[in-house]
Every structure is written in structure tokens, then in C-alpha cells.
Length: 259
Image (cartoon, rainbow, N blue to C red; front, side, top):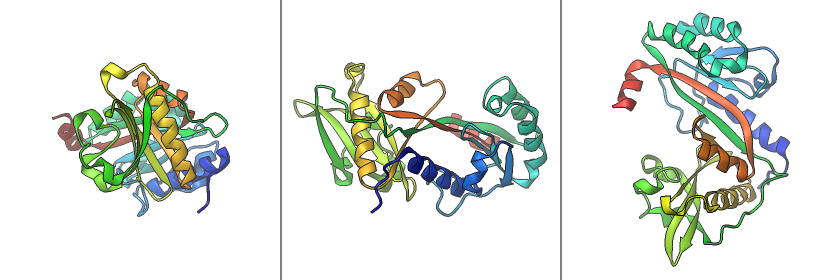
């Protein structure tokens, strides 16, 4: 087992995985110019990547790598070259793309910011409550709404490791990680409302991230732009922003999600 020990190792692992995810090359994300590749979800892609995908825009802060179906290539190419790359992930520029995709039955669907651990900052944080390391067999009775960020009932087989906070033997906070691909495990965390703002989320997230690193995997964390509570937890836990994604899918998919 190779233990990830440097930030460069962590970044390289993420670049390689993103390349698999969207049919690109790791070096594409480090270019100063935008790169367009043919749309395709790689065999080793993160498990939550599902077709159909009209386009997926990914940026590690240098450019945009756009994985695009042929039918939308000309439109997406015009878009990413029309605006500064980081403005392509926000309104009002995003409306330019969305309005034109809508005419073809597609819409902007998912938008998210992803975080990677900074090995110079991450450490096991304390919260004043008992913390226990949990394994897959411990999750059987925990697939309930209050733990829906930490665990995913639809992909139980991927929930491989967790950290729980307890008071008097009762679970009050839970961080879980999903083995979404061979090299990277995603962390999600939940804390019961009455126990929030006590440092529990950061204690669980940091402990679990260190456990993942010790197993030779790269932990990563995902948050919506507007989820300030989640973003603060990522930073407090020793994570830093690493890349952003924006995905367009058919209108029918969006309608189903919204229903």
C-alpha cells in the first residue's frame, strides 16, 4: 500500500481521477487554454457519474476542460471561449449557456465545489465527545434521514468507513466515506441539530480524512456553492478548494429530480 504523504501526490491523484471521469488527460486541467474532449464516462469513473450527460465542465483553477457530446460541442466551445473561465460557473454568464441548451432539451443541472485535504493543515480535531471509528458492518441500522449526508442508502456497498460522535452511548454525529472510485473516497457528515456549532462535524471529518489517508486513499469533500456551513466545515477540517464542476443533463432528468 502506498500512503499519500504530500499535497502534490493528492492533487495528482485527483487530476488522474478527473481525467478518467470525463475522458480527458490529467495534464489537460493544468493548461492555460481551455480543452474540449469527447464526452464519455470512463470505466473507472466515480460511481455517481451517470449518463446521459450533455456536457461536463471541470476547472482546477487554470482553465476549463469540457467533456461534451458532439451535438453540443460548437455551443459549449463558444461559451467557454466567450467568458473568463471562472465566470462560466456562475450567473449571469451561465444563463447564456442554459438558455441555448434548453432549446435542445438540455439544462444546467449539477454545480459543485470539491475540496482536497492539505497535509500541512489537517490534524485530528477534538470536540469533547467520544469518537468511535466505524466500519461497514456498523452502518446497517443507520440508513435514516438524519444520516443521509454521511451514508447513501442507494449505494450501501460503497459506504466503507465512518467516524461517529457519541454522548452517553447515543450517536449524535456521523461522518461516512463512500468508495466512489479506486483511489478516492468521498466524505459526508451529519450532526443532529441540537449538537451543531460544537466542533463535532470538523472533529469527525478530520479524523475520518486521516484514517482514509492512512489506508492509501485520497479523501475528498463536496459542497454546493451556497452551503456555507458545509464549506466552513471543510476549511476547518483541513481541506482546501481544489476543483469545480458544472454538468448539463436532459430536461427530463431535472424534472424528475425536482419532482
